[in-house]
Length: 346
Image (cartoon, rainbow, N blue to C red; front, side, top):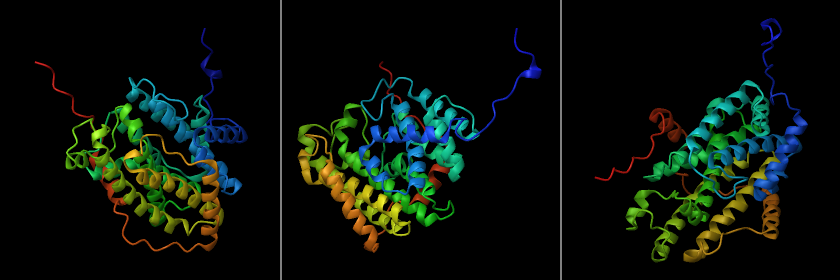
């Protein structure tokens, strides 16, 4: 028989789903160490309190990405069948984390803890989850504005959350815009580097309008005879990356020293990836671009002196993509529409 109702108890709500904070921090530290060597190195530069919160947030981002793509720690994509159901699961687990209910997944429990400690909101989390939804729907950008929206969801929105974790007030729009710029810069470097890997997974984040301008047939951009056009489009991505990178440095100048150092180190490492892809030209995708350990340490050292001097060069032009405009578009456009279905054979 079921237990009498008088002895049933509801699950108490508590940040972290009832797990010990120390255990969640240890788990999150291991997650970042295995999931992103570059970001793990940069995160070591934060003060201890900020570092732990950054790890807790990263663990959720990493786990959501792995669940959405059926992969492990950012490895090879798994079977994409059922991706939309996995995104639904991410939303449900994230909501339980906000409620302080146990999720049976330490990454989501970690997120519930850091969300409570730092005041992260459901809207912030949903902006990130919408990026996973775009990929689950097989979405591809038609225009540069579409590319901006994608980069916002998968990286800019994460930058906003990271800024709040670092102590930036939620109503400081200028600083949140600069954090978003850093996310844009990171994602543009990733897109440029991973064009070949994405193509093998039947994904392409180059705007269709760009491909049409270069007279490239759909799905043919990685063919050898299009390498020069691809290199030209990549240079276009990196020019935009550098604009957002410059504005992100303006925001970093207002952060406490340790946070400023960490942000500048990450910016230098990811910026180096993007510039290396550009500089390799048509050979950029012969081998995956990586930044070795010694080069990373040089960037960390250079970032230290840049953080000490703390006099970023004034950007020569506006970043172009504006977080406010993107958010207005996101809020007004409603649910993301799936791609059009191919016509049925006659």
